[in-house]
Amino acid sequence: MIDLHCHLLPGVDDGAPDLATSLAMARLAVSDGIEVVACSPHFMPGLYDNNADDIRTRVAALNLKLIEEDINLALVVGCDAHIRPDFIDCLRNDTLLRLHDSRYVLFEPSHTTAPPRLDELMFNILMAGFVPVLTHPERFRWIEGNYNLFRRLVETGVWMQVTAGSLTGRFGKRAQYWGQKMLADGYVHIIATDAHDTHRRPPLMAEAFEVAAQEVGLDEARHLVLTRPQAILEDVPPEQVVPLMQVSKTETASPSFWRRMLRGAR
Image (cartoon, rainbow, N blue to C red; front, side):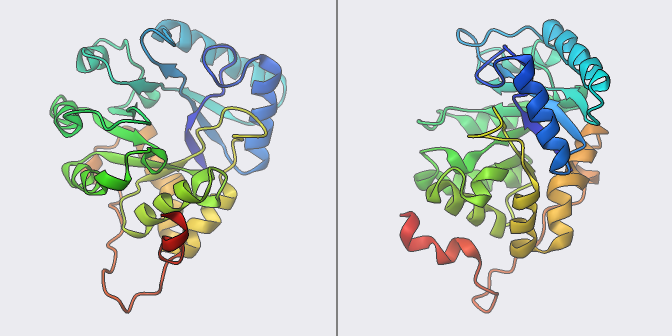
């Protein structure tokens, strides 16, 4: 499996605080079946003012440390990019790190408030030749009244990344409900861990893969954790990547987990 959203680098944001934690997270990821991790620290002006060149250096150094420790995990660069006025310019001049220097970039809006004109910003990023991968929409507090926005964004070409722990209930029933609903509706492109540590938010994907396989089938589950993430690393144009599954909207379809949770999640 490939994990394209992970706060593994030590001491750069609210993720791993030190090298020992980073190594422990790496070992846990390998034991779970993860072979490649994108180090994606927050790039948030005024709070996490990370520098692209510095992060590249840190990722290279940690890769060497993993080799020294005989941890069979490959690291690539990325960032958890937050909204800023010069977002597109920062993509063009490499101030913001795209996933493995591809056209794909992790994009994290506010958790608490729907950003104004988000669809316009996403469209402009796409028109500039990049593909925004919206991180963990199932965990946003504002998803309830804006679910159709995510559908429209997917139809426009924006990719969606759901957190593995949301599908397994680690983030509570609400995130599990919305993650399962997005998965069942065919709006999820990739699953990633968004790991920050080894206990509360660990780098685990295997259990989420099993949940996805039960919900959408084994083939689509593999696309979520391997095929599409690999395509991102290879910078494959989105129109050439395995498309999202076509979901049946008929009432005769097997009831999915999110429907069974409907009452409890609201």
